[in-house]
Image (cartoon, rainbow, N blue to C red; front, side, top):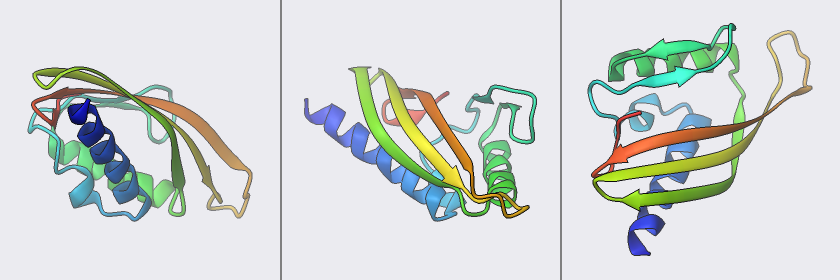
Length: 120
């Protein structure tokens, strides 16, 4: 479906913006009162409820993992333009601030879109 192609392309571009620390571009598709959640009790865990808070979270991500590189392996798009769910499976690698190059993380982002805008 053509719609799925454009959604996948947009999601991949968002990950590219994160890899290149282009935070303003990374949050462009978010609605003003987006719900952003990262599981876990760590420096990046918690919830944010607006676009500016998510932007600050990306800035923190850039400070905590300044050379993080995310590789998107698979994207699945389900639903229609008025209610779309996107799953993006990725691998992340980085050298930690202490010089340890063994950081590897595998994750799955779940996005809820409405008319091309990220709600959650």
